[in-house]
Amino acid sequence: SLEHVPTPGRRARGRAAGDASAAAVVANTTQPLVVISGGGKFYTLENEDWAGQAPAYRHVLVANSTGGLSFYQLNTEHSRGEANTEIRNSSNVQIFGLKSEGNYPVLWVRDSANVSLYGYGGNACAFPLDERYPPGYAQYPPSLFRVERVSNVRLVNLFDYARLRGGNQTYFDGEGFDPHTWVMVLDASTKLHTPFMERPVLYWLP
Image (cartoon, rainbow, N blue to C red; front, side):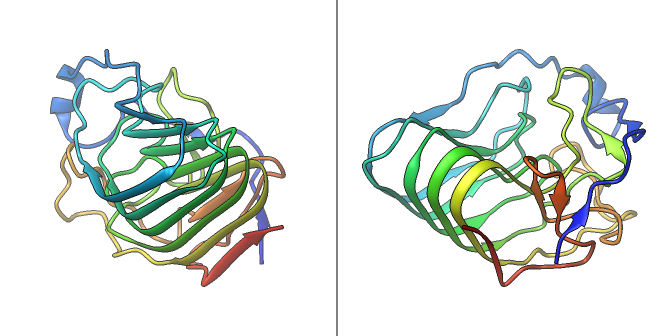
């Protein structure tokens, strides 16, 4: 089942996440670290850097890839960009196992087709649905996964390791939030999202 995003008017976050040390970090990295436009297979691709990343930064950006691309255990986490991994203007992409931590989207898929993710885990925790991203970020309702203008996208077995308030709150790992306040998947095209607390076995947009 899906639910509509609530009426705008969400609170704005004053900083990205975590403790006061966040204020001392200057976001100046605006280019993706890894850009993939071809096809092929990647095994155990991992990155957990976080410092100095502006909204346009991505650990991995798949752009204009149509020849067939597969990842076997992709681990992109802690990014302060608008997404840890983005798939844009691409098709025929498969991810077999994905893990992440932090508060920003784990995966953003837009203007793409035939994209499949088989298995997600990690202690990533989206910002609450009634909050906004910091200034300079695209103002979508927060979620861990974001899809937009896509066809035949399958997200299979999305399950997190719950991260609550009052635990290890660090800028590196991000903040914990009550799982009743944030959502796993947002379809930005329709403004529909998975219900609070739902962990889909299969999320499919034909």
